[in-house]
Length: 84
Length: 84
Image (cartoon, rainbow over all chains, first blue to last red; front, top):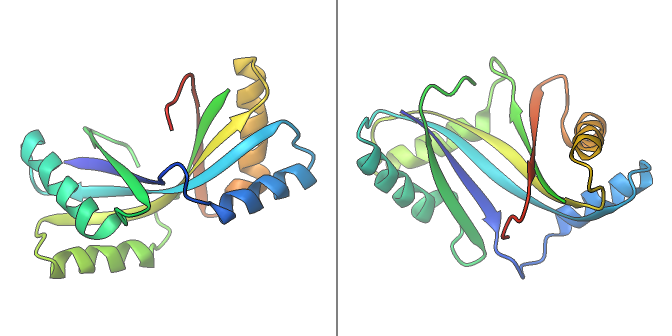
């Protein structure tokens, strides 16, 4: 089963990388970019086929390794037949 | 208008970071993790309100700055009323 775990900074946490991208976009001529926040995604292929158990395993992975729960949020999406 | 640009490695491009995460998950006791690929997401707030023009501007941003088109794919999603 394929899944996608998305990890984003909590709101209120500074994102200097996002700020840098925002200013780079400005200097490339893209006006009207209000804010940019960068996050991470993990495309994970797991052997577990039961959706509920897979979701709970992925939640564990996110909390133990993928996300820093102090400053980041995560969400887990199960994807069937994802192409890439 | 809020949008999310997702940038992922093209299939066939090596992902050493993904491999490292995979082996770290293994040593944490998560068996059955087939493969992991890491990508990036950008949550962007742009002033443009017309969905077609916004999508085309975001496509430009992705091709000029956010993604390295040699090794990465991107996809653009427009999100109305996204919460974070």
